[in-house]
Length: 302
Image 1 (tube, rainbow, N blue to C red):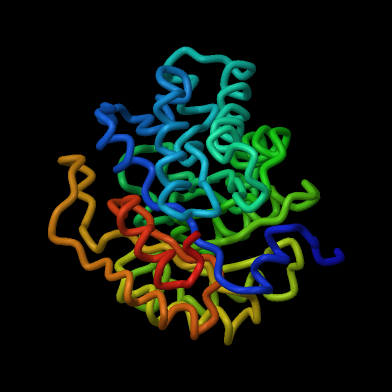
Image 2: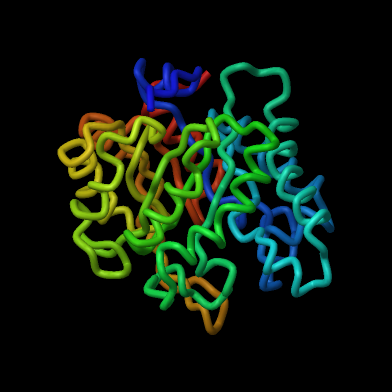
């Protein structure tokens, strides 16, 4: 297929574009209760104004890409709460609309529709392990309906994010094929491998030659693992790198709490940029204050 030429893709060719940070930590700072298994996705139904306010906080901080609250929003997850397919489709589209509203009239703020992994729906930390016992075809069937619902809301890009396993990455890329919406693919990694244990070079090879993919990289990992990943992206795929690690703390899925201290240092931005990163931001526990520093160091603050 021919390369998808979009305003966001054009911006990446000119220099770094700043992503937002963790949506959940900003919502928690706004006083939202995220203890539910649906996590931030619950607020799509119960408090959409809080999601829009969180997005707006990142725009003020300098973010130019807003990642939607659809990471943990799935037909299966909402069905457990008694919501039917039509209502879930509405909420998925709403996630894109809320980010678009937060961007306002700005033409230099883009919306990335988040497509989280199968493990996020299980809400048991499986996205940090992968290997669910499902085939690529089964995972493709799981992802396709919500990708189609998100694309109906016309996001600027699909964020296939926090992917722990190359098999799931293949399924996601298959499900997104033919939508006409560009994608980025980002793995969650530990050291030089995916969480499922595949070498990152091998996992990233999936996107080489796929013109729908405008960037590839890592997210929701320790910042030091992001350091080594950026160079691997360019060497393996030739594409711009997307990098948005978490704070470096560890998620305890049983206690549903973060452990350890922060290791996110905005000064790393210079190294990421020189190594080929063009989409740069933060994931869990990286808030607007840190994103403002990232924007300043990347030279994109306005």
